[in-house]
Image (tube, rainbow, N blue to C red):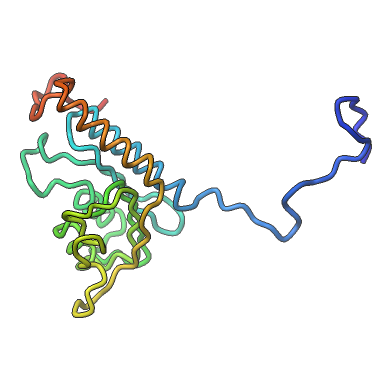
Length: 191
């Protein structure tokens, strides 16, 4: 094929990379983790620990959530619990067959247990939590052999971005740039 453009080094344009049988998967683990990171940004803007989650079924995001513990004054208002509730509403069932949860930080024991009970197919997380992560780091609730269901785990997706977001939030808290605990309903609402 002639290009007719003097900026090309040759008169032939050669396709690079893909052929007729190749496919490009734009909606991969990194794509969905970036959606979870955007949810974590909402938490951070509302002075919550920046954890975000999305639920994906059949390649589509069906639910989104972010930590709202301080805002709701509810210790169970973790992003994972909230996204499971929202996904169940969309699906019309508590069983999360075929659902993958993407979350920016490794789930705690409560959230991992909820995923097992809800029969989530897979959880994908970014930042590991060696002190209290329950998807294999400190505990392995998702893969415990005695459970009726085991959740597949993919760890470390966009780990650097998730880690930096988390570290920056706590740097800001320590430096007084964010209040340690604050929700007034006026300045602290997601827009």
